Image (cartoon, rainbow over all chains, first blue to last red; front, side, top):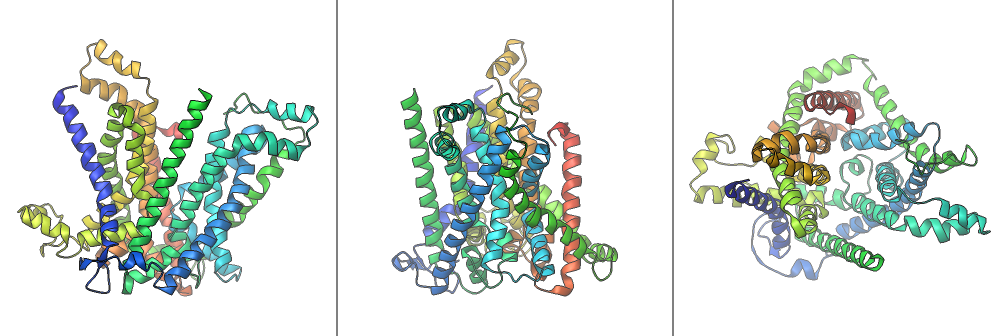
Length: 263
Length: 286
């Protein structure tokens, strides 16, 4: 491979990364903006106002905490359901397994607008009014697949005879699960929980169609985009980015330390 | 695939006890809704809801397909070299580079897309940078700008933002499949007097096709159903199927047509995926 081509590839990668970070730069920069108009689109002058008063808008505060509440409930339910599915699919050979695997993959092959709208038609037919409960139902629906897939990938190859050994030594099933199975699957479950928490917090399309009068944070952003966009939205965008980056970095560090510990 | 550590359960119902709750949830809130979507799509006027959807929204359907396809092609053009660079030249910085690709996508989707509004708005930063570089004429000639010298509200802005939002879904699967390639195969190429580009065409590219296929699906499917980018960066001339469904979801009388459009969208995706698998020769991945 010639030097020029190597050079070109590197330049292309650098441009692509710049493209990926350009909007992020805008989000962070405009969180320090005092915009001249209602919408935070034009640079006015530097201001720390949005950072000092992140919850100035009561509606934004409510929306943010609603999103967190939805995410906590949806992640808890989907982690329990999804982990049980993953355990069963990895451990056992049984009739109907192909069906279960297909059922898990199918929601990931459909655009969100179809998933969301079809769920809405069900709620309409069944006369269920949309709100907190229907948002959670929708979130669990798309999170279960991610949990099951993530946990499955992490626990494949585990030596299940350790469980039998525990049972042979007189451990009750619950104790076996707590002392043997759970420590093994914990990293996968934790990774799945983090992923689905992020997905739930960020979901807009499915949520919007099934939310009734309960605006989650993304819905708040969507609605405010029509009239006014306060710079506080950018403060949240920046904070979410920082928290995720911190989590990702600590994840890598823990992984590294564990690898060093096990040699 | 039957792996060796799978075993027969002590009692036949144990695996079903474990998958049961999740399966029921998906049956109730994923499978049954699809049937209710089908029923709704035939309400009031039966099958003519579909013909009605096509005659009302024919251009929108075609436009949705074209935008999603353009987004997929652009993601491939930008993402493949990036994934290749990280997998083959990344060295010790591989994980860091991958993290950099994913990091921007930790912020809220909507906030990210609004940042593109800031960049692309009328007389905004992008327009003025293009102007000060003296490229306005070129941009107009290739259709990236309208005759008014603006980017906002037109197809390139919408497709550009779609490409941005789904790029990592293209990069990651391609990276994984490139990373899996046995590097000795790549050394065998030059050893047998193949040129660099021949080795790439005959060895690297074919072995990375599963990643290309997976990445294209993960890009094309969400792009075809999206309405966020078209709403924020587009105009009435960039309406996609998702926009129609979003605009009418609170109007009961229009739900049959929206349901029919949902099925048209799914059919569009299915046909696209099958043709694409045919072209790439990756049918066995389906």
